[in-house]
Length: 317
Image (cartoon, rainbow, N blue to C red; front, top):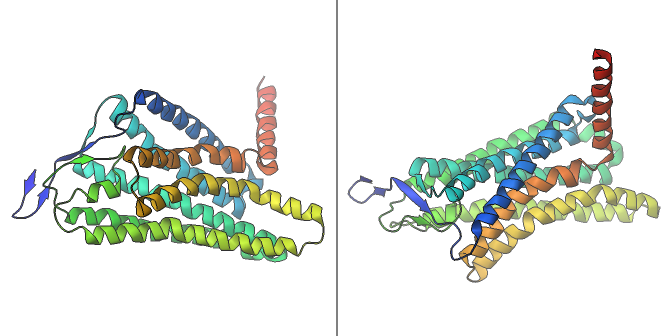
């Protein structure tokens, strides 16, 4: 350890993981399976969007970004979780722990805001369909995505950097399956008020604001749908939103439950960790299946690629 007069920085932390749960290795094997399918699904989706020109649209720029952040988010978390617990390497160097925290929080935040940007895309498509192509352009979506990167990079950098001001002179056991912010700053010996405030700000920015924006978006969409006379047209417009709504439920409900339960009363560490691990992993697995791979545009693009590949094989023979 590095000692100053009143400052102690640990050489490493110890990740406790789940406690008193039998056969947890099966859960980690399940996470391994989730990661493999996540990588295959998202890489395939990125591949299809990149190669098919008909998908080079603002809407699929957002889908591409979601697939990319899903892939990066899962890669920043699951392999390290498997290495930590399946191979019992629970000690993690201080600097590596902060890097671990940074990437998990960054890509999780980007996933959340990408879902909000998708809601904006659906709002314009349904509320003002005639102006959709003039409002939702490649430049405007690129600007929104770039802003989200810059803003969230700044926020998460500040969140993680504030850990450096803390002194750790007691327990170094992190009650989590990864280098989670809350369980780490609560181990500090000195005043962690600023870290607590920053944690609350991050929750508001990453969870509350996107959820509020999405809720407002769907209120506006509901108003727009109520003005459509034809029932068939209403159902067709609503069908374009169902996949997005499923993704929102999968991503936000466990997060909201965990944070509300933690604020309102005591939540068992195992419950919090299970919710957190599923929130960080299942949306990335399901996103390409629910939102993209079953849509007509993507399926047609896959058929085009298959025909092109089949034709190339015939010509080469």
